[in-house]
Image (cartoon, rainbow, N blue to C red; front, side, top):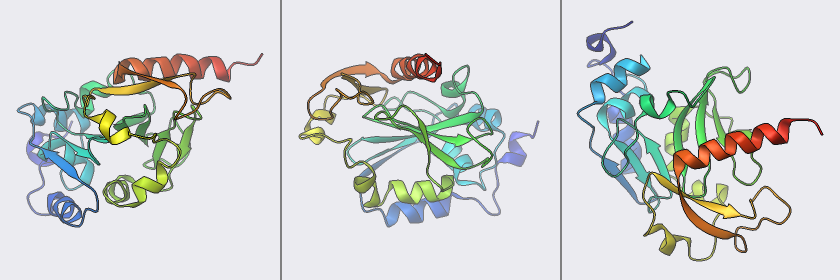
Length: 216
């Protein structure tokens, strides 16, 4: 394993790039300060702070974007009580979960379990229950998440009054819809919405997706 000292890159860190992206952000955001557990998180990831992912893991507790709709995971914070290492432990297989949203969608970096394009970003969409290629890496994902392109991406996954509803949502929760959005009966505006722990939603998705993949 690479030592923490070698993982912390003081010559060419990615933090200035992230700060530049934040300075040019078109959306509201909240940059959470890093956890006291950040050294363990970075060591667990074995990624240097020269990479934006390593910088987010070590220099931040995470990012809340667009009124908290999108949550980028870092080293953890009381407002975002998850970190990149513990959140993925026993949960992700062949990919690394790095962000999620209020609609119950999950973003990951492909580690080989989602296809041949290792390092590419994927989205587990709540309206299809399929992993979808985004054709970008994590660095471009950061810039994209802070841009006005986010609204276009979520067209069809945001309901009337979603900003108001986010006021009662914690960053370790998401909305669960019934009928499910991926069914013919599901509708972003007509399905009922309930608050659910985001980890519980992930496990529900895993179970449902496994059933959908089984032949009749």
